[in-house]
Amino acid sequence: MSRPEISAPPQEFYNDNEAHKYTSSSRVIEIQDRLTERAVELLNFPKDDLPRLLLDVGCGSGLSGDRLTELGYGWIGMDISKSMLQVAQDRNIEGGVIQYDMGHGCPFRPGIFDGCVSISAVQWLCNADHLQQEPRKRLNTFFSQLYRCLKRGAKAVLQFYPDGAKQAELITTAALRVGFSGGLVVDYPNSTRAKKYFLVLVAGCLDGISTSGNILARFESLEADALKSVRVDRRSKARYEGKKLSMGQRLTAHSGHKHPKGKAWILKKKQQARCRGKEISQDSKYTGRKRKDRL
Image (cartoon, rainbow, N blue to C red; front, side, top):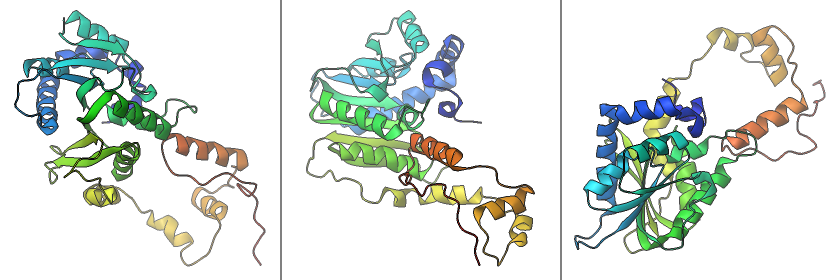
């Protein structure tokens, strides 16, 4: 099953049909309730019965907002999908909702929210829908403005599904870079299906809250799973084992025809990789140059 964020942009993937199907699914409702309860638990508000206003990023049709209302919190939600927000309004939710792309930030006054929750949304920022979008810039814009609209010392708990260790590091590092403290909390780390990732952040540095160090070390199991999926073509390896061949020669040996791609193709692929959030070396006059034949 492919990840929805790879299939299409969120405003297209969650069309009218998908929005109604998503909202009417008992399984989805149960998962949203459970994840929202866990996010509120990680916010760790003191039991003082004071009214609190929360921001729900990627609120969708308001399923997570319903649980926030039941738990006694006021909330405002933002989502990019017009169809999901229309379903939310048709359901007469108690929170307010606006249509907004979180990659453009959070359009609220500074210091207005007592906390923030987000369920299964932040990973969408790591996918570029066109060449002009850069995941690193979108993540930086989102976290910068989220920091701005939270009260100092307020927490944000963002549940997300990382597509590997590199993506988890990309998201977490972007949050820490703008001033947040905190790190990742992994529920059921030894379970493949039940494992859940929560990015727990604090707006400002507090005692007892430390920034995460080597985030990649926390994802050794993910890297191990990725290694298991790598297939080695032994026949192709045997063709040039022990020989030093150029990339073009290896591709020719593998496919049986000359490698036709030149500098324009290389520049295009590098740009696509940058849009997916990967660290790529800068272009130069040497990019894609034809190397001299070896003696």
